[in-house]
Length: 472
Image (cartoon, rainbow, N blue to C red; front, side):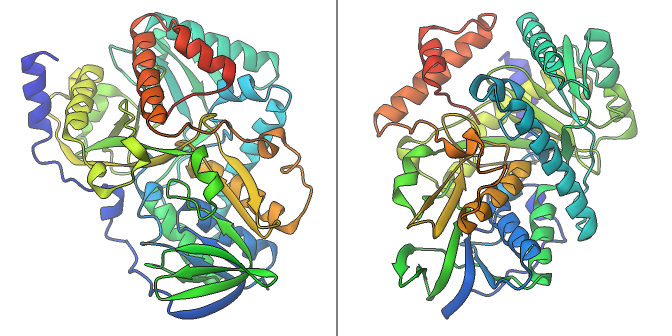
């Protein structure tokens, strides 16, 4: 980074508040009381992020008479569900390319299920009056290097061959810059229907309210400490009591699973984001963006960016930080060196916004698995179900995961549970220090590939053959 660019980037960050923009909203609900004593229920949901909230909501929608309890260690939506970029994608497989590489025979069905899932989210938002700035604007994957143009065209052609390109549009340099103007954009692939943008914290708060309206008992500041069999059901110990339940659904994601054997399948990856002050009409006109799509570049170390309802630009990604030992800690939510890198990249992408300042800077942990998309399973003789490993695409896919968990707990063989994606597991991450060394080498190799025309070295090609990977 040139000294002048570094100074300019640093100035843009001088007033940034070290808190997630979304969680500062004045509409944030008051916390609910913690559980004290013993509660009994048909279904206990552990975790008050999207995964747990969707599970509780779908459980009551399927069976209004079911007695459902949800416990959350802090407040609903405070972790990844309130810190993400607000990209609600139809994809259940972390993108078309990843799905094609792993489940080619199922991909058409997975794409249809994902599209239906996103439609159902849109319908749920409307039905329960959830004010979360939902916009079905789609997303453009932009190419900033020539080799990325070739890769995007290959994705489009393969989707077209499979009859899955109806809502896709390839954009050349002039076409993509007519949508959003950056001198770094060489082309793009616009998915017009497969992504919605929303206010992530408002979605979580709205789902919590909807759950309560349907009769779910929600307890906040109630961490699940221990899971054990209790007669024909399960018991979960909490700081001030316990819950006795016939069935348990675990939506703990990045936090250590109450089923210990699941823990090696995920690692926490810290992702960071900036939010600008609201753009003026002139600033917004200088970059276009009239159709308000979400955007992401096509590098291995990628950026994602979008407009908020009040025309701020959220700019995140690039660094994906794995802490040694898989530690999850609030002190890792801030990383000034990453903020400086992100700010410099922002002004390289949008030089016409020179002088814009960032109002917020924050980070948070994502549950990443080696195949990039969620995995599922049961424990304790089918009385416990879990879903984890959403790897940054959980805003939408967690609703699908909720239905999978409920299917599994019911012992039902459904279209979802028959999927090989649902029946199989990713490869687990190795123990330390091998995980630290392997992830470090992978990150170095991905950066080299970005600088080398996309060419993957021997290490990355070996991981590809084994079905292993690292992403945020």
